[in-house]
Length: 185
Figure (cartoon, rainbow, N blue to C red):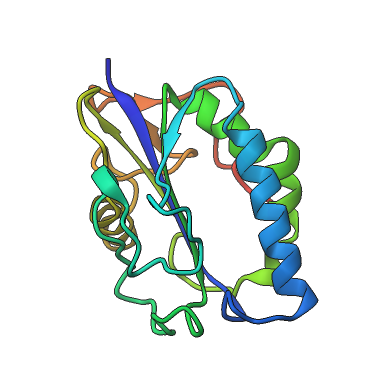
């Protein structure tokens, strides 16, 4: 049965190594969100560094998730001291589960604070696509799909929640997922 891959990417205002309270708050909030999301119905897995080190994104061993990669528009640092990004790559059973996990609870609260932590950009900050049950998406897959979404809009190859597609490539409309409900203010 196909699974939904979800890649998120954002450029942070400050490097992850910044000792400021706002950066610490971002880390603490992120850890709590990850714990909660991992218990959400429909959640299957997410990319985690084999050694558990959050600060070494580019040098970490990501196992089957592949080498860490970023979109072409990311122009900040790539060392532990200068990296200023947040990215996730996860697998879900379906659109509804992923949507609910993103737009409810602790993650929704974090989204409401995103302007405190993230730069505002013109690029999309997430993309979804379907993978077969024997495939583990890679970071490069996520980047490629996000860049495709940026260049071509929502299509079966790379789509958003409000313009989504089913595993067979046909447009999918799920109650509560649409142009107005997908907006977070």
